[in-house]
Image 1: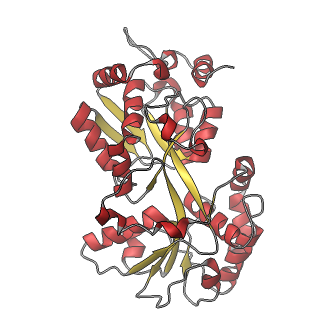
Image 2 (image 1 turned 90 degrees about the vertical axis):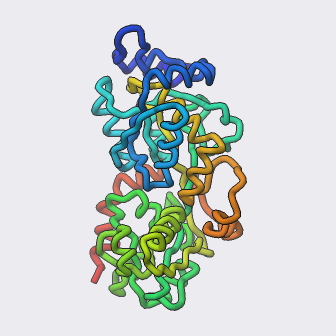
Image 3 (image 1 turned 90 degrees about the horizontal axis):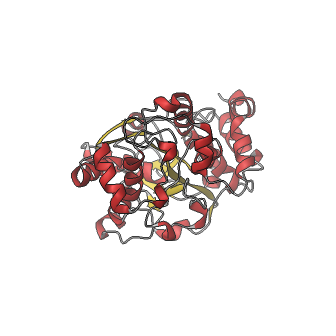
Length: 360
């Protein structure tokens, strides 16, 4: 069976120069960690897509890589779909070495020949659901759809999707036609109402009711509006919600937010690094993944309030900011990725026809 490296090699043309090997010639899994470190230092930089400093505390990771290995860094903030499009469009003129995408997109990237594998020295500690057999996919952290309530606007914070239906406040989800986060919010509502990725009707009906009641917020979903107190209840990734709350407090605001995992059901999804098959700096990209999955790298992500794929010990002050573990006991994971991919492809028309057409 051909490995992803061989598949990539059949698709790519040389992008190296001098004595350096081009990405399709590199077998990262056969290199020792010392070799990867040495050659990464020679490459001198690692450039990412979709890994900005303020998302899941990526900034601390780039600082660590620079301090320990001298790697310079730049990022362009893109969605998962945009990252894959960039890798595919630039090909041998690649400007980015590594990206961070939703786990579904990571497997799509592998199928498209856009990745080269690297397992890292922590491979055996990564659960089977969070990786592929060769090392193209390596989930580093995951998020779970949560409810974030501004208690100054909503005195009785909802603890479930059923509670939301019984409320009288505005609910913000964002643009389901474009946002991956918003699409998972729809899936979370579907799961809570008895559906799944193969049956989104319960979730669509849920939001249709809110739309008919005039309770579905049609404004932009962003940090600024949450900080200004314009959003009563937001359906949001847990780590993003906690990060927003802490940032508002750090900015001098008197934030009073309730953040919980819906008791009647929700969904989780992992985020995987992908090493660009066309990268000119494969060793720097591999070292970045190695560092991200190390104890230090995982702690950096946890300090961004993400739940890490490896089990690491958290400081007590950080634990107090996180949602209690017992709220995560009934979290759903997508089982049919093909069905979910098809659903998201048609999401724009489905959402507009079945929900937004009824919005007041």
